Amino acid sequence: MHDASEHQTLEAICHIVKNAYLHAGDAVVELQVRQHKIFSGKLPPDTIWQAAKINLPDDGHGLIRVHYPIPDYATEDFLEEEQKLLHKVASEISSFFEKIDSAEKQQQMQRSIERADRLTILGEIAAGIAHELNTPLGNILGFAELIQKQNKNHQIDQDLLKIINAAIHSREIVKKMMFFSCEMPQRLEQLEISPVILEALALLGPNFKKKQLTYQFNAPDATVRSTIDSIQFTQVLFNVLINAIYASPPLSSISIDVEHEEKNVLIRISDRGPGIPAAQKPRIFEPFYTTKPLGEGTGLGLSVVHGILKSHKGSISIIDNEPTGAIFEIRLPLI
Image 1 (cartoon, rainbow, N blue to C red):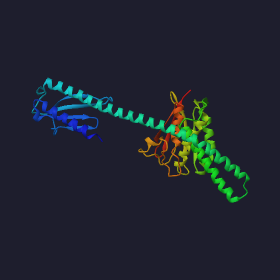
Image 2 (cartoon, one colour):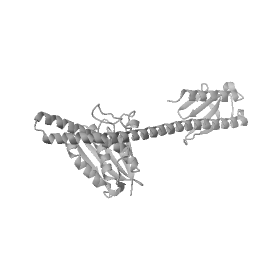
Image 3 (cartoon, one colour):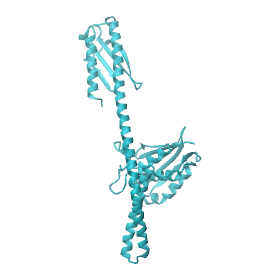
Image 4 (cartoon, helix red, strand yellow):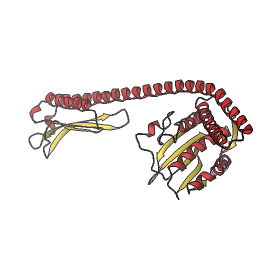
C-alpha cells in the first residue's frame, strides 16, 4: 500500500508536466516509480514519446514519459526545452523520494533510541527489584527448610514444601531479572561451542522424552570456538530449546545446527511448531512479553537471551521454518 498524499503529489506533478507541453491537449504523461503507476489520461494504442529516467535513493529506477498519438505527431513535435524540463522533473522526483526515505529512517532511528532507553530503564528497575527480593526470599527459604527439619506433622510438611517450591521459583525469576539487568558476573573463556550444546541437550533429555520429541545435532566442524561464559551461554540454550520443546508437536524433531560464517559462529535451532506470527516477531525479545498462556511464562526468557548475547557481542534473530515452525539463529564472534 502506498501513502495517499504521496500518490496525490505525483498525480499533481503529471498534471503540471502535461500543461507545460506545447501540445498539452493531446499529451499523455506516464509516471512509473516504485509502486506508483500513473497516467494523466487514456493512452492511445500507438504513440511516440519523450522520456527521462528517475534514479531512486535505494538504487531503484523509475521513468516519466510524455506521449503523443501516432500518426498525428512525429518526433520533431517535441521541443528540446521540453526534454530538459522532463530531466529536471525526474531529478525533483528523485529528491522527493530521498526526503521520504530520510524521514522514515529518522523515525526508525528514533524508535530504536526510545526502545534502548526503555530497556535501560527496565534493566535498572529489574536490578533494583532483584536486589530487594534476594534477602527476603533467602530468609523465607532458609526458615521454611529449618522448620521442615523440626516438623513431624505431615500436613504442615506438605504446606512447607509448597512454600519452599514457591520461594525457589521466585528465586529463579530474580536470577533471570539479574541476567536481564547484566548484574550477573561474567567469566569469558575461549571454548568450543559443540560440547556446551551437547551438555545442554543431555540435561534437557527428560524434557524431550516427556514431550515425545527427538533432536538432531549437526556440527560439521566440531572445533569451532568462541569467547563465551559457559554458564550464561547454557542459559541461552536452555531458554531457546525449552521454547522450541514447548512449541513442538509430539513425535516431531528439533534440529540444532552449528556452522561458521566468515566472522561468526552460527547456531540454528529449528522446530516444527506453529511458528510465530509476523505481528509478534518484533516484540518477542522485549522484557515481560510472552506468547504463552497466563501462568506459563514470565516473559523474561528471550529478553535474558538477548541481553546475554549482546554482552557477548553476539545476536539472535528469528525466521520462519518451512513448511511450519520457527528457526532461532544465534550468532557469536568466531575465534
